Image (cartoon, rainbow over all chains, first blue to last red; front, side, top):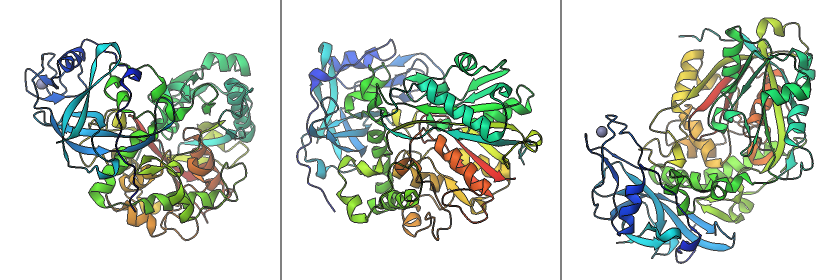
Length: 144
Length: 397
Ligand SMILES: [Zn+2]
C-alpha cells in the first residue's frame, strides 16, 4: 500500500533557529561557507557528531574539521505531514544520513527535490543549504 | 547469579487518580493529583502517610516535562515527619520500571522503610507530543530540531522505518499491537479509548510521521499514579497481598545512548528499543526466562517500540517481532504472552509508564480487569528513550 504524498517540501528557514557552543561552532562556521564538515579527533581520527569536547575513543580534546565531499547515504527517514511551526498540512522528509568521508558520523537533516513516496533507504544524496535565522546556513540534502 | 535482593522487597500499595483527557485535569494542580495518588497508595497498603520516609522517583523527579515533584513540598503538604531517602533515576520515562530497584536499594541499605514512587502528568501548558519543538534549541539539539522531528513520535518513526527496511516488518504488525491493546481496554473502567478497532479503521488513520499513523501514537492524558514499596517481612502485616520485586535493572549501552535524540546508533541498535542489555541482566539476575512470564506490561509510547522490546527481551528472535505479534502471541485471549492487558498507553492512559506498574500489581494480586489465569510473574518495562532504560520482574507472593 503506497500513499502518494507529493513533493517533499523545504521547511521555512525564517522559522529555524540554532545555537552553538565552543564544540559545535566550527561546524556551523564552515556551513556558512557552504562547506560540509564533521568533527574529527585530531589524535586518532575518529569522527563524532554532534561535536562534543572529548573524543569518545581516546578522550583527546584535539579536533579537526575536514572538508567533506558533501555527499551522503540515506540511513533512515520519516515522512511528516504537518508543519512543525503552524500545524498546517505540509509534507516534509526528515532524514538520517551517513556522511561520505566521515565513517560513523551521521547528520539529521531534510531531503528535498523528490516526491516523498520515492525516498528510499540507501539512496545517495548531496548537500544543499537552507538560509535560517541569524544568517546561518543549515545543511539539507537533495538526491544526487 | 541470583540477585541478592530477590523477593526481599514488595509493592504493598498502589493508588491513582482518575485519568483525564489532556488538559482536562485543570483546575486541579499537579500537587493535588500527586497527593491523591500517594494517599490512595498508603490507604491501599494500610499504612499512614506519616510512615513514608523515602522517595524513589524516575525521570529525574519530573512529573511530565514541565512540572517537578519536590520531596520537601510533599512532606509539607502531606505531613510526612522525616525523610531518610530521596533520589531519582535520571533522564525520562526510560526509568519507569527501574524505580522499584531504586526503592529496593534504599530499603535494603537500611536508609528507608516505606518508599513512595510517584508519577503525574498534566498537559495544560505544554503538550508532550511536541515538547522538543517547543523548547529553544540547545547547541546539542540544534543538530536535531531543525529537521522538523519535533516530537517523540516523529523521532521513533525513523527507528521503525529502519526496522521495516532490515527485517521486512510491515504496518500490519503495528496494527495488531494497537488493535489488541484496544480490545483489552474495552472493559477497562476509566480507559480513554474503549471502542473496538478494526484493521480498516487502523489503516484509515492519518499518517503523522510515516510509517506511524495517529493510532500508533500513545494517548495524551493527565493523571497521577503512586506505589509504596517496603520489605517483604513488613508486608506480612499490611492489608494487601504483597507483590514481590523479583528483579530490577536500569542502564544501557553507549551504542544506544541518547537514542533517537542522537540518531547515531549503529545497526542493530538503531532498529531496536535499547533494552537488550536490560533484558539480559534481568534474566540473569532472576534465573527466569521470557517463557516464565505470565503477562508483560511493555512501555507503549508508540506501537512499533512494543515490537522491538519484545525482540530485545527475547520473546522472539531479533527481527521476528512482526510475524510474532501477527501470530496473535500478545493477545489476552489465547496469546502466549498477553501484553498490556489494561489497554496500555495506547488505549487506557499515558502517565509516563506508571500505569504499567499499577496493572502488574493488579495482575499479581489476581484482581485485574483482564486477569491472566494464575499469573505469577509479570515483566514491566520503561520507555525506550535516552538512557537509562529499565525493566523489572514482579512476582506474586
Ligand atoms: Zn580520538
